[in-house]
Length: 349
Length: 257
Image (cartoon, rainbow over all chains, first blue to last red; front, side):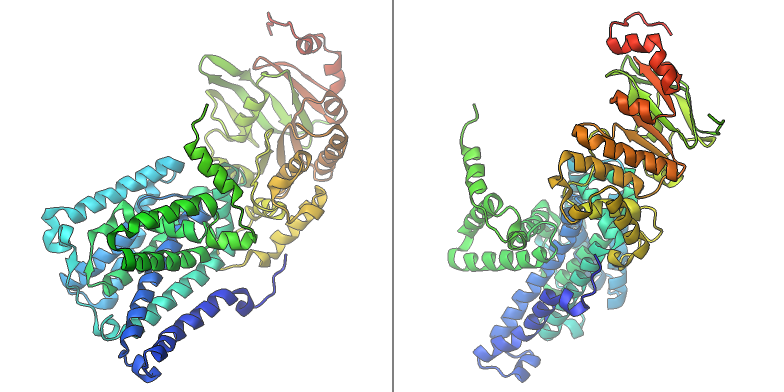
């Protein structure tokens, strides 16, 4: 079982991804006739647009990655995951706008808040399992959503209009320094992914997988499973908070929709499309999700969500292991998919 | 038999499920370094008694002592660290993980670096060595990289046993280790259990249905019936016990002990 292959060969996929993504703005710049120097100076318009799309995808991927660690690796299905993201986003916005805190102070505050939230969720961990945990987490997140939406908080959160006009520090301004923002978001995503890979192969990560497979047995083997779940919760929350912070800095306004169940479901969908428990599926899924949504919306307007919905249903039926999971198994079996479909429409007798 | 010190003792152990006393006032002593079998007809309360010993169930009343320490209310994940391991009658493994990983997880629990996030488990040499040793010992070496779910039932029983051997506990609670195994595989497993017990001076508590096995390997036998201890003694004493014979033949409805 000794694995002596080097860092480079073991992580070839993600390193190629990193290189391609770094070059992408410059390559796209060539198409619109901008020199790499112009791209460097944030002057190309198409490449700037692509960078923007890229940033959105990286943020989604980071969020989905944190969801996969919790759900795909440890087996904890949280319906309140959006709260980790949204608290970080709102906190960043409020701290910069209303409290006018220095940027690094904001970063520290957001990460601290992420840990506190993870511990709050952890309070219920030893007591509830499975679907009950899912519902309790949904409840916790709903409380936050209601607070954000309440008109009493309008001065802080902007209620249902959203938080607007967050002063972003000039050195990472998504308008004037978009390339830098793009590289930072990409680097954070790649670094987090590499850390997650290491984590899953570590003794702690292996126990998390054991918890997903058979928690009672893991306990019998001598693991205090609650502590492991708390650790994963904290790591996941920190990652989601990083994504939330980037979101607040990138978007011109923070909409309350990032705090509701829909956004958690977005994370779940991305992980399902990419492949549950594969980690790389979160990145692949984020690309598929965002690009599909973008393309369909462009050509079909609002009715796009009907088509995306249908595509997800087809995905769950026919590609239940997601893109990455199916590639890893090297087989696409469609027959069970038809059986599942028939099972849904045929009356049971 | 030489007099040995008591390692596990139960005092008036009782467990009610509703109005049913599954285990009723059981006080026994298990001596260190012996193979102690618990037998009895179906529904005698053997598994419930086992669950009380291993901490999977909390007794309604009574206590379990291990080396003089009260075990009642100790969390389950502490048991193996105290030196008590148990296997299950119904195979309880990680079906989607490899055989190697199943055993490795069992042995990793005894390591002190479970919270090193960036360590590669393949580099935990002691744990890997122990895993390889146990995988070989239970005879699953050729299947070690297969997911546990694809193993035959008999091999899954071996894996189950491997998962309790890996952490090397002092006391092994084995709940029907041969349940559902093909007859020809049984002697192999029993020999393995005997070897482990004798070479390591372990205490083995065994629930078993196979009378030939029980009679040949046990140092002491406790017979349970309707939640109570019916008889206790060496295999020879038990074989000669009239009450035990009747209990196994059934029809002992007015049992008064």
